[in-house]
Image: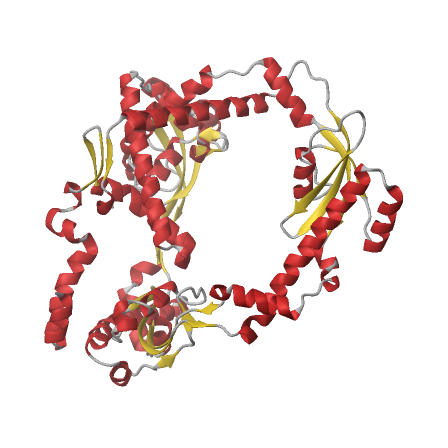
Amino acid sequence: MLGSIRNKTKGWVAYLIVGLIIIPFALFGISEYFTGTSNIKVASIDGVDISKAEFLAKFNPQKRRLQQELNQKYDTEFDIMLKQSILNQMIDKHLLEKLSSELSYETTANELNAIIQANDLFKEEGRFSLEKYKQLLRLNGYTTIKYEAIKLQELTQTQIKYNLLDSAFITSSQLARLQKLNDQQRQFSYIAIRTDDYIKKVKVDAQSVKDFYNNNKALFLAPEQVKIEFVELSLNEISKKIKVSDDELFNFYKDEQERFITEEERQAQHILFEDELTAQKVIALLNSGGDFAELAGQYSQDAASKADAGDLGFFTRGVMVPEFEKKVFTMKLGEVSDLVKSEFGYHIIKLNNIKTKTVKSFDTVKSELLDLYTQTQAQKVFYNLTEQLANLAYEVSLEEVVDQMDLKLQVGDFFDRGDTRLNQKVVTTAFSDVVFNKGENSEILELSKDKLMVIRVLEKLAQRQKSFTEVEDEINTHLMTLLVKTFVDNLAKNIVNLLTHNDKDTLKKLMNKSKLKWHHVDWVKRDSNKVGRVIINKVFALAKPTNGNSSYSAQDLDGNNAVVIELSGVKTTDIKIVNNIALERSLLSFESSEIFSNILETLKSQAKIKIFSRNL
């Protein structure tokens, strides 16, 4: 339908019609256009639906975070994986809620408070701070009621896992055996055989290279390629052309003066009380000459500020609770307040310092203003030109776009579908049906928030068979690598064979000829860093030597080299009682996690779960 409209209409009318159709579909999808996301379900568990609105509320923040972290690496595959992960989490959550309800699990207010107060995020100087707790929640868009309701639900669900951990057990003999394995020490020697040392000893004959090419031609196809023409709209380039006079800048300063205002700040001390009787007692002490700081240290119930004589530092409006703030910002310097009641209790406040509201002068912020003005004006121009570019790219050739918008027509190099040097939007669009097959201009491609592009195919190269000459060196290197690795592996096996048969003379000659030497390593544990981690892992994977003799093994090392290992000794400490709480908790946690996973799988197998993939 869109294609026929495009073919039969021109100008701004066509652009408007297509735009009106595309925008709602692009934002919501065709089904959402008629029904809305709240009426679309993405899954159903035992007849209880998960709506698309619920799903998107979980999915979209995670997607934005991943896109920010991965940038251009975030692709369709990541999107699919993330959708499946979020949906699985929501299904698991539903199943656990149902199980918790059936088992009559619930979390008490005291348990919730204990968990919250133990969270280091809400602590100041090692103690829970109610002010910091509320401030952090407010900054993250939560009210205390909303956050605590969510936390309560999470804790109730996780009780299942905690109960498994509490009920799981491991015997002392099992723990001792595992501790012995963990503390085991091994003594060994090794010979490292590296392919780089033998690469010059290997030669590949010309006929083998030709035979490999003839037998594996499918490996040497040059993929379909394309060369594009394009125009770019760059915010940075637009900014360079923005000119501003001092008068314009000063007027902008007047309009944006709020940006350069430093809000009034006040510094206060307070003494917090739980009951009014004690508060009145302290007021009497203050009126009779008592020291505010000393009384704060003695009586205040605010653990966060008590050690600093009740000092709260400087703060602006909007930080403290309303009753406290209202009083502080009406007090005179040095004044001590009467009792102020808030949700935390009763306060006596002393105002110690005032930093008045100030406005930075034009001269001090001129450089900042220039950048801000340039950016603001460039953004306006960029927005207007974006609309113009969208219109023109849809209607006319790139040459006309260049002429009308004073842009530059640029030409890229050939690239294929798998090219990683370019923005993936460019690659995908270049090989799309509209651009690659129909030869039309692309839609506007947003490469970043400040750079747009429109592309058109200039030239194509079909897939072709690479000639032998093109790939001869590549094949030669490949075969040489295979030969030298085979040589190194065989050398390692030959050394092990000689060691096993105790042929010392032949072994000595071979090692001298190959310029190899033993590296002796004294007793080490699994976490040793005396040698590389790969070698340590291979040593501890070998069977224990028998009858007091050494054991020998030839091993691949990182897929490129080889190593010969002589394991000469294994020793363990005789342990009867293990006092390793960390190891025990780790094992118990592993055991309970396995059981927990099995319970989830059982719940899924027993539930009627339907997933509507087309709605994701």
